[in-house]
Image (cartoon, rainbow, N blue to C red; front, side, top):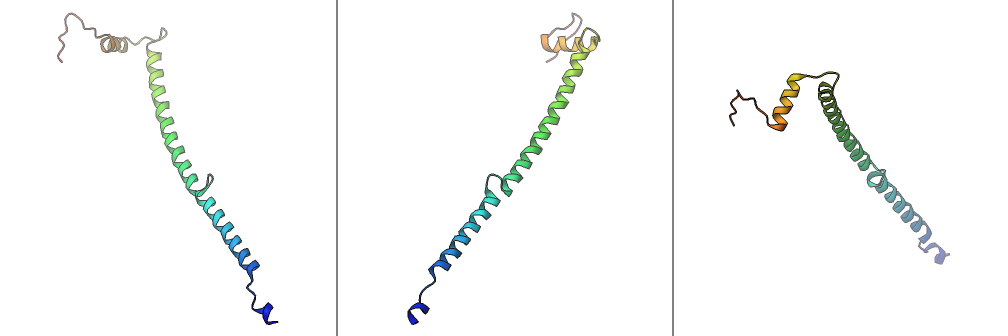
Length: 100
């Protein structure tokens, strides 16, 4: 009886070590894994940045669409056309003085 009573319970210790290692692995994966907490925060921040960029691009598109419509055959804004000719092509009238 003394031989069995002094025996070290290896099976129980191995079970506890295995349970601890599995718990540590799943905790690590839940925090830093591909679908973990840190990755979710990173995805949300990236999505917000992309939303801001999208909104800015929509504003740019609206401005460009407005300018395109104003230069179309249906609606010709003479002042805008004159501004674009002066800016892009560098034209000036004969009676104007250019100061740079």
